[in-house]
Image (cartoon, rainbow, N blue to C red; front, top):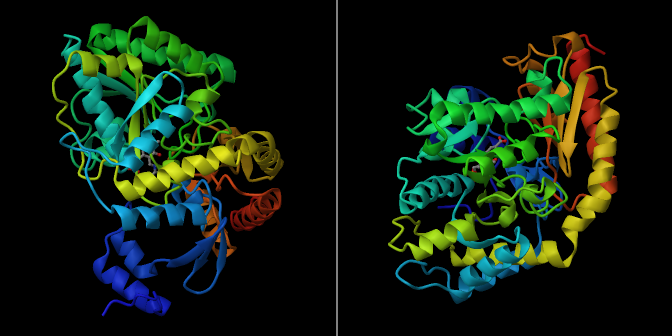
Length: 459
Ligand code: PXG
């Protein structure tokens, strides 16, 4: 019989897990040897595992639990909706109050030219939806050959066929014959790895120029859209130089190419603005989003669509043959709407901007003095710590990761979740983190850097 109290010894969870559960992005043989860590409960910015260890969650789950764990308003909104109407769909000319309310709230908090949303259940589905919608737009505009979408290497846009194709992760492309046709990649604006002797500003202009080169290579009239995360998350919190986005915006406008800002990580307050697009003053034509939309309490995502694109979809008419059973699921929509109300009514985004993000960034930069650290990156409550034993090797670390994985393991042992992307350590804590919790986070991070440096003879 199912154990509804979730009360089993760790070893038993691990045995069942190995026997029956295929985890995402996991080497199954390696995990079977080690056994999973079992997270059993959470509150605020803390997690507890099945051994009773308390862990500070420096990643907000997976960049998503923006309001922190245990918010009663969200839990109650979900429960109320499950009682009243646990499911109905948005197909066949029907809808329900939570989907409508959430649509209106999203139109309120997103940039002003974005007034319509297409609901999905995840960021990957949002990006698949975006690809179909962008191509449909150009079909309706009488230019079906305008088909190619340009993305960037080391981008992450999800794990579905289109999401993984848009992403620029070579190991993902190597599995399953990706990318799908009509997707091209340019280099990323990663000054630390690719900037050479250029200043960040010079490099930002050069990196944007790679888009123009690619457009001319494909032929401007064949390019449908350009997609980018305002700040690359899973790629290692890569903050582009200040000159990058203005130049990208200019190029998209000049060649009449749709601009897609993937806000799955940057959205809903992460940068101290509501969206990364607000931070960089971007005017995206489409904006895929997910994660922080419901603070991860229930799965929901969507694509915000600009008036320019919506007008064509409506005016030129015809059915858009696309949708998911759970597009705008009532309980997920009710939780997301409550999440947005709490973010708005408690002024949480503003508090991130004025108080916690400046403090987090200041404390993060103090870690920059550590002998193991070469570069600190970050905006809002996003942080990246580039580890390096020898600063002269700035360009050569792409395939390493030993320092990063050792440091990540020390973090877990010492009660902190910090993610490693090769040799970059990544932070993205809940937006409700307090200054004293930031102090605790940084002290733990510093201790784990010390332990890692000692192991590699770098202290
Ligand atoms: N776009 C971006 C920018 C993302 O970061 C997705 C789309 C896909 O969302 P879904 O909901 O389909 O996962 C993401 C997801 C990591 C990690 O290890 C990052 C993501 C997902 C899983 C792991 O950093 N980002």
